[in-house]
Image 1 (cartoon, rainbow, N blue to C red):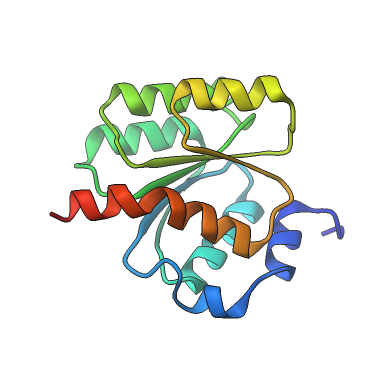
Image 2: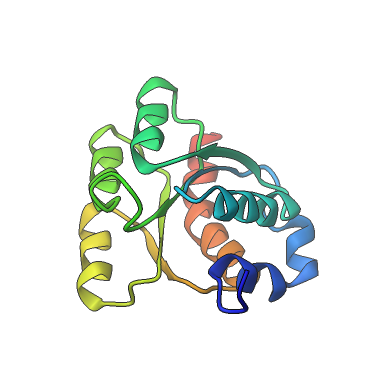
Length: 152
């Protein structure tokens, strides 16, 4: 991997104290078309204590949510991966009644894409490359309310 690869950047710029406990009890679904990226993101989240489910694309994530009760506290969507650039997936997840956090990951830093992500129902749009601390912080911030509400 090159030094500018998003997954490597996230893995090498981590905060060990946050990695140890930041997401304990949080169930995260990752929809990422790159197997290498999926593995890295999953490892970062597992180090932080999260339960992780992996899907190879956004359509699979939508299918999982449509078949299961709402068990995911957060869904991570790689935007511009497959399935109509994944913005449609966020819209579909909301249409299915998914109320947890949806966090978009993107290497496209355009205002137009960010706007489209938020309009489709994403709670956050995290630009690649990002650090492990940024990744965990975004998930913590956007799962706090939904996580506690679903457990009541």
